[in-house]
Image 1: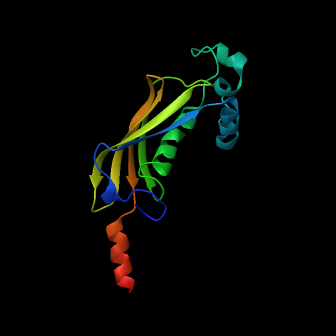
Image 2: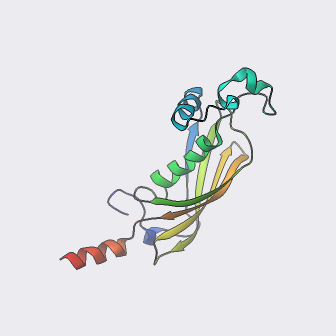
Length: 152
């Protein structure tokens, strides 16, 4: 582990996984709309949203996707990791009151470059609402040791 208690690339194994869960509130949606600037009425106006195919308000897809970032940055690989890329497929809506569980699972590891590819899946209950893949750069104990020995 690194000094921030995140996993070094050498600590990871294929199949390791972690989950971050969050119940989406009305306040989360309103705050995300304000921060992102996405004030689309399907997220912010119940009367309008009721006339859409969703039949009511839904959370921003990127709000739900941000829980993947929380799982990666706080759990696996954790603190010290840097997002390099993410693919996303939005498969089902998330509504106010839904609990989203974002699970990340290590698919491949490049020790030399300290890169990790993880499967990313968000679920509400048994329903997959988002799936994709993330590429992360993480810390490396070998690099820290090499740097420390070159400065001494």
